[in-house]
Image (cartoon, rainbow, N blue to C red; front, side, top):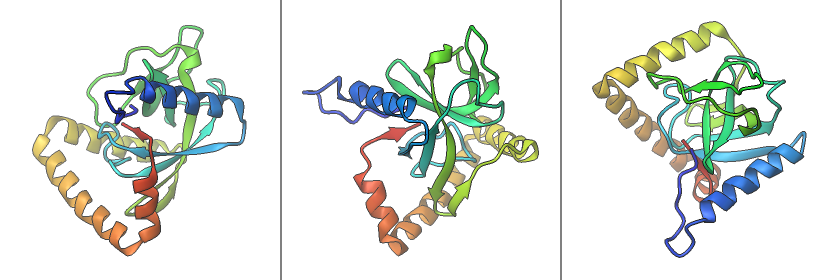
Length: 182
């Protein structure tokens, strides 16, 4: 979800930014938008601090297993598509979340994940059922065992900070980003 970091003087600013990004993605077929992740719901596939590239797609183009970006209550949700789109909507779930998200209406889909930049480097995503099964298994471990989640986040934080130190371009990219997704 888009993390609100708007000042109290501008409480609607985060909602305006979310709506603007969603409109840009929906109206431009080949455009990609980069977002900074803040949440932990997609561990171990995506980590806080990763910068992801999202490209526009329709609900008809999205396939189960892909990681998609949806808009709910003026906040972004970047989760895995579980059930394909129907007239009633579609279902998402974070890899380290115990339950499915509530049903999203078809118009809530904004785009799909195509790439991430993290301490491991640039990664392209493909629909690979074996990889998704492992990610879900590790995600369930992180979901139900907070000690494992805490250790993984600490280790990731160290590696991530080392990467930022070695790669000033990535660090500048992270600090200049105004949008965050969880």
